[in-house]
Amino acid sequence: MSKERIKIAPEFFDIMPPEYQDLVTKATYGNEQRGWKDIGTSKELIEEHSLCAGCPESMAFRYILASLPNPEDTVMVGSTGCTSLVFPHVAIHNIHSLFGNQNAVASGLKRALMVRFPGRVKDVVVLAGDGATVDIGLDMTMQAWFRQEKFTTICFDNELYANTGGQESGLMQKGFVAKMAPVGKGFEKVRLPEIAREAGCHYIVNCTVSKPSLIEKVVKNAIYVARELGPTYLQLYTPCILEIGKNSMEGLQEMRDAEKPTERFAYKEYISEPAKQLLAEMAAKDKEKKAAAKQLASQGA
Image (cartoon, rainbow, N blue to C red):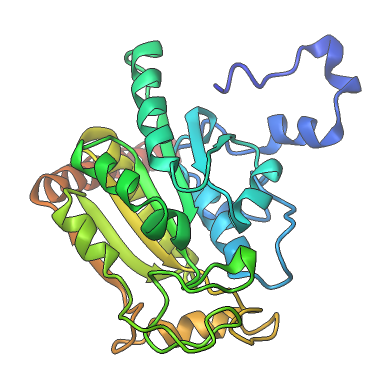
């Protein structure tokens, strides 16, 4: 989907659904500077969802979609789980894969887009839960990293199988007792960020989604690095408040507690040397662009 293709022919504008009219006239398509601050002022790429009230995943979805630098030319690949309930509401092309094979689907998709649209930026972003990423889909996740596929993988880490009743997952904390894990987890949380580094990812972040400005930064960095160098990985804590016994308004505090310096979701970032160089060059160009714009504005005044 390109910005040109979503335009409405003038003779049909008045009969199009008002939601589509708003999307075309008020969305942030074509604006590379779009970000989380556009939420509530521009037409959002997700406005309604079917997740539980207060679900941190709904916050994460909004921040991620608001931070995509190229939504009109982005395809998201999802997997079975709570996330699959949201994708029908998303104003971005998306594919629903089978449970666990999302990185294999994204690999073929990214390569096909590069052949079909040479010279044009087409971003692919995988979004899946911890079961699809680290348990059932670990082989296909890692093989995509080994092959240096140029797309971003985002894991919504619920630390259990939230969509099917609270079974134990590889990312669950050791000793945690869930409805369908009554004796508690018997082994430590799988260190997937460390595995991602060993498997060749160029940019890796482990954090919560409590800070929208932080999510905007890491999402953009991950996508920019993936475009040029290879695989990137974000592991975002999006706790299932129902399965861990929290009220609908307690998800944000749960994330804040989990991101304290000594906790498992304290902010951690890994950037490969080529990625450091790329991001530094991009930051320098952005600084030059802002300085030029500021000078032009002062001359006009």
